[in-house]
Image (tube, rainbow, N blue to C red; front, side, top):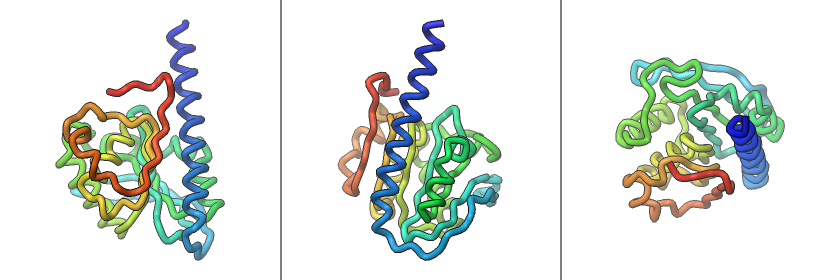
Length: 195
């Protein structure tokens, strides 16, 4: 019973951190030029012979925000939490991606131990979505994905918001953190640990 309560506390605590990160991100993005206001829509795109599902809040800020998810979640989590609606209401152009093997996306899951595969996939995905410069937000595994992509593409990522990012013990990440020269906001709870 204590384990279940601990998990629930940790989940609620981390969701509160994510909500705080989103609010700070919205404040940061308020400086971007806003053109219009649209709805959150579900879409699919073919990338490397995979069907990739994503949700898009299409308020057109000049700098899109890409939301990555943790291991136990998907793009639906961002919608269920109200994050996409909040971003859309604030006219932020955002994409919540179901990574391969998660949510409604097909394919084999990509491990944090496969940085080359991950970077190739994310680069191809962003090219297919016509995303050049962007901001990334990722909790847990999604934070690890965001760091790995950013290390390989530091000029494309203009801001990084991480919530208890996973993979900090992986050599590809730990040995290249000096490449993160853009604004980085990291949230870390007292119950979070490196894995």
